[in-house]
Length: 110
Length: 122
Image: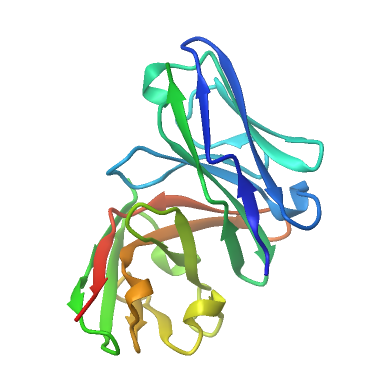
């Protein structure tokens, strides 16, 4: 069974930079998995931030960027703002119509 | 603007059934792959099912195979999820999501509805 891993929680200071990661319990994440990232403010529906590893979805500020770092997908927020405090989820496309989400990272900005 | 409006959620007993609907507008529904993603209370996102542009191609996470059925009516612009043999662990907010894909390049959920709550309890 494929398990996608994310840090359960992270904190960043306002104006700081933070990198959240998305890995696999067995194997490496590559662009082949078409990593995507979603932001979810509590009580709201998720919103797509990044797709195809590093492409920002429409309307997403350029302080959000995606990449592959080592054997994981990564979401970097540069110049964090108070309203970036949210839950962040990655998703990997495994092929044959199957997607898997990571457990999510709760980001605190303080 | 893309709009996805789920309906049909509610309280159902274990072993019972329910059908969720998702009315889509603002895009060419028949040309888009669609999915259901759920979120149990206080938990993370969990992909449930995806359907291709035609009803022939359907995909399910292992825990719902044989119990849930995804379908679509392109003439009505509506996505469905039939939930049978429901269990307590199926209790969740069920989101309808529009898929954006380029075969061999990317696949992601570009738009989401607000969700329909399914509660399985006696």
